[in-house]
Amino acid sequence: MIVFGTNSGSPLPITMSSVRAFEKNSGIQVEWILNSEQDMDRYEVERSGDGLNFEKAGTILSKGNNNLAVNYGWLDTYPLKTVNFYRIKSIEKSGSFKYSNIIRVNTGKISNADISIYPNPFEGNGFNLQMNKFVAGKYTIIIYNKLGHIIYSNSLVHAGGAETQYIDIGKILVSGSYIVKITGNETEISRTIIKK
Image 1 (tube, rainbow, N blue to C red):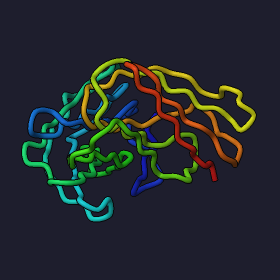
Image 2: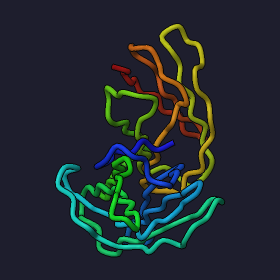
Image 3: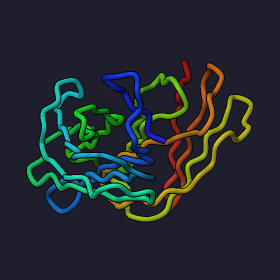
């Protein structure tokens, strides 16, 4: 589940299950999935080069009220040359809005497959996982605690190149360090993350 920031105390009638961004041809494809949506007007894709100062880069109109999963996508045909940060601004017909988590795509050349995790340290029950220069395919992500016990395991499909996905652990972890391990397609990478 994507955690939203909001400008008001009342929740918007949408449930966003995922936001991701990945290189596609010479651009960057931004996609998001809603479990449901009610009384939404539009979605604005905002872009930043530093992750702090965002500007509107595109607008997608709502497909209307729906209790089923709804997929949206927008292609950034002229991304920034090095790092691109994106977030989705979900705007209700009343004018209320919320932001998705920020996702990041590096477009600079990276020689070998690598992962980045942010924020690190993280709070709550999830973090952003960026996969850089991985070949397209299915991968397994496993999170271990310091005793070596598996506390999270899931698979994901990577579109190839650079892609960022939000990893929802599904529970609040105790403070401390954990190991994130990615395996698949003859690749195995581990990183340490810290839960505040």
